[in-house]
Amino acid sequence: MSRFWSDVTRRLSPYVPGEQPRNADLVKLNTNENPYPPSPRALAVLAGDVGPSLRLYPDPGSLALKDAVARSTGLGCSNVFVGNGSDEVLALSFLAFFTGGHPLQFPDVTYSFYPVYCQLFGVEVERIALADDFRVDLRSYRGGRGGIIFPNPNAPTGIAIALGEIEELLRDEPDRLVVVDEAYVDFGAESAVALVPRFDNLLVVQTLSKSRSLAGLRVGYALGHPDLITGLDRVKNSFNSYPIDRVAEQMAVAALDDEVYFRTCRDRIVATRTQTTSRLEALGFEVLPSSANFVFVHHPRVEASQLFERLRERDILVRYFEQPRIDRYLRITIGTDDEMLKLVLALDELV
Ligand SMILES: *Cc1c(COP(=O)(O)O)cnc(C)c1O
Image (tube, rainbow, N blue to C red; front, side, top):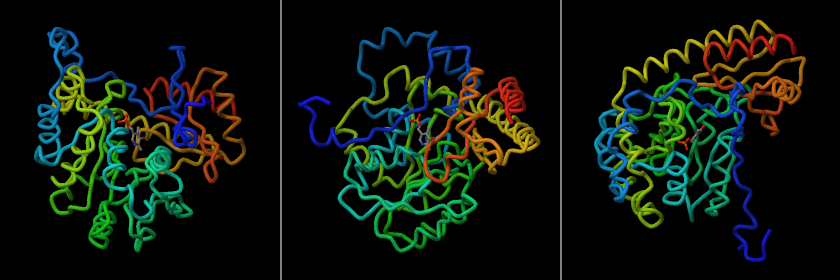
């Protein structure tokens, strides 16, 4: 605390990211990174001639990147906004669309950055309880007057929401903006991107951090009606004209264009998830049905906090949330087959 802190700074309770330990020997299953390297085509950018061009500012409109996102999603450039990770895209969306209005609705168990943005930008919150089976029930979101945001699949549960239910919500609530955070959609949920041309109250947010193995590059994007994109550009251009640097833009374009590599890694992770799920179930764990690159699990006889600590002692890092409703669960990222085998062997000894 400093006497120079403003009231706003004093009142914040910032987001706490999962630990990024320096010890490289850890089996790191705590922040949903992809265990496979980025596309070789993206990596080739680093060996190319981008270096000398860093003397110059990047393209403030990131047109090459918007083009690549448009190609990969089947939408037009005017439907695309890009930012420094989808966290930044989300933050700018909160500022552009949710300030000064009615309470924003989101699930009581969800991505813990949402309440942080609300606090930062003074957005009122209405948390909507998940159903008893941890599903997001979009019928409970009817009748509010502010915006709505949820991840699909939800985090940290991994459970997907059916596209038909999202479409019904968009149709029933045409005057409320619905933001679908699709950070994990590639691992098994149905994307709402196909609905963008038909609904001007839909914003879909995606990232290269998880399914494209580029968490370290910081590139995310939003897809929506051109008027929503213009709104985001107004806010972005009042804050930072150059969120996408030259290296990030070129690497992101290369990664987006490498569909074959993307699918190969994604399919491998989905196969590992299936195998890990059955192995954990064989050890007595309850595993929520995951459409993401992580599983959310709980053991009827052993405390999750205990398992978290014991795994840590064995250099295996997973995520534990000391929060109502989910403090008996662990969130475990799907790593390589080898990493998951180490996890299962350790848990076999611990339960
Ligand atoms: C990881 C994650 C993000 C943020 O990803 P970026 O790395 O900032 O692109 C956004 N939403 C959810 C639900 C996430 O899990």
